[in-house]
Length: 130
Image (tube, rainbow, N blue to C red; front, top):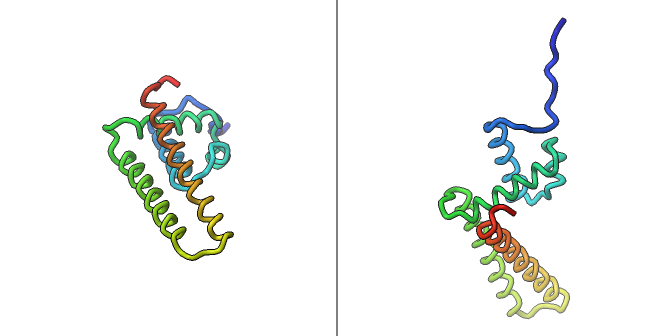
């Protein structure tokens, strides 16, 4: 009689499994922009687990000791700010009304993205239990 290994459908996870999963969540959420629900489907993990992993990364960004991920966050923030500056420079050129509205919409989205990231990080820094 052969024993079949059951596939895992939930926690608890070993530290190694947790680290691997968190790194995948980091890549899918922060680098590729996937929402938690999609990540949960991709990884076959509960959505609440993914949400906790995302919260973990935001709290890591808020801590000054976090090196590589903090550097990544700073780099992404600078990219957004430079993109915003380039778009503002485009507004100074002779462009159509439609182009102007598209650029202003893009600037607004960048501002909201920056504000959202900063608020999440500051909230995690001040209220780590949330």
